[in-house]
Image (tube, one colour):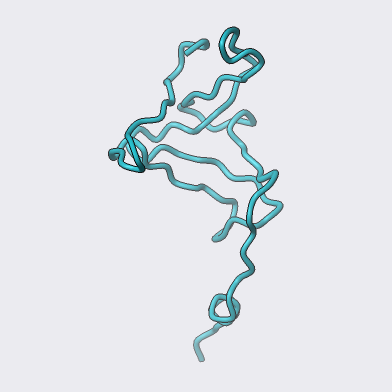
Length: 101
């Protein structure tokens, strides 16, 4: 990596990888909401997926470096820009407001 921090790479073939491919979504609450920021923490090393200002030259000109960072910071918050958003199911909504009597 350009910044000499923990390298993040892709591994495997046809959807098969290993335990080093596992990341945990860290939310500010119980669920990841559409407009919320999240962090991705590596399950085995506990580093956070981060981005620096470093940019690659050839053949990835202009692409920013992504790496693992031991401490949480502003550089490891991520926000969804596009994708498929699923509405909570009725079961989820009922569980959210359920209280024991």
